[in-house]
Amino acid sequence: MNRLSLVTYAVILFSMSCNNLENEVVNNSNENSAINKYKIASDEYIIWKARHMRDTVDDYVSKLYIKNGEIIVSNNIIKSGFLSVDVGTMKLDKELPKNLIKHLISPGYFNLNAYPTIKYDINRVSNDSCFGELNVIGIKKKINFPLQVDIFDDHVRARSTIKLDMLKFKLPDLVKTHSKQNREEVKGPNNFIYIDVDIKAFK
Figure 1 (spheres, helix red, strand yellow):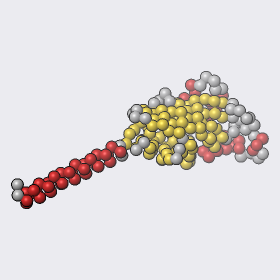
Figure 2 (tube, helix red, strand yellow):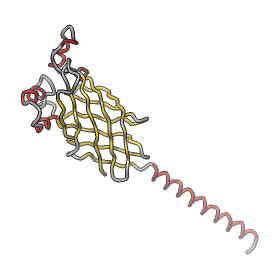
Figure 3 (cartoon, one colour):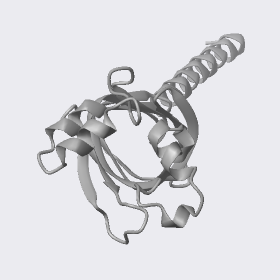
């Protein structure tokens, strides 16, 4: 093999090596940027806790079941998603007073007939906090809260306790109650509720 042939052979080997390396980088990049979707099952639920203005303990503790939901994960980070809660499932709770359920699903509160679900859209999750938008009776508000997330190959687990001011959503009867003077003396429901979240979503 003459010198020219050796040079040509070396160039061919170098070119093949570069192509293989480029393909390897592209493949690794595709693997690292893979997007995984996790579905939230309908048997998952959140727990809500409410009390009257003058009380120091929760008067009502109940469940609301998830209608549907999805969590999008890329590079082991939640990128987006949503959670839709079925308001009507509060009627399944035998411990809640029937007159309370009737009131909560009425047009004065959650207006079940017009708005059967409450939806939270996840915009992003970073630094152990979730940033998104909550839609209650057609009113959307940016709601952020601390969130503990565990991501596995087959599922995602999300946990949080959220303090939520329901006056933000202008529930008619709640607004009427809290528009009175001497708000601290109001006998009606506290505008703040607590929501405990511990849900799983599966591929």
